[in-house]
Image 1 (cartoon, one colour):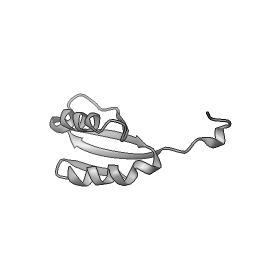
Image 2 (cartoon, one colour; image 1 turned 45 degrees about the vertical axis):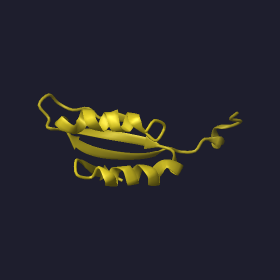
Image 3 (tube, one colour; image 1 turned 180 degrees about the vertical axis):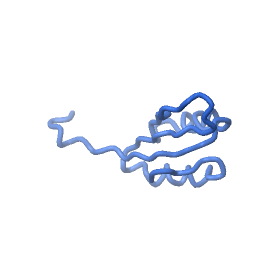
Image 4 (cartoon, helix red, strand yellow; image 1 turned 135 degrees about the horizontal axis):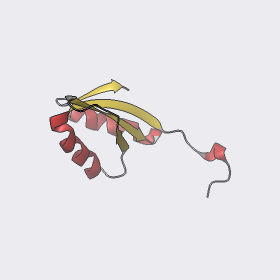
Length: 81
């Protein structure tokens, strides 16, 4: 049980980019790694060819997320590590 706000650990955030065509596969991959990271698609305009996705994770998950992103680097680019 949390006793004070100071007990909260700040989340680590990253922004990645993938093509619109690969976005559904990326979402499925992130869902398959349940609990690893939360994600949110950032706003985009109709016709945009890419999707930017914010990843939010606990500091202890950063190395595992980076490893996953390295494995899928052929279709994902890290914009903000």
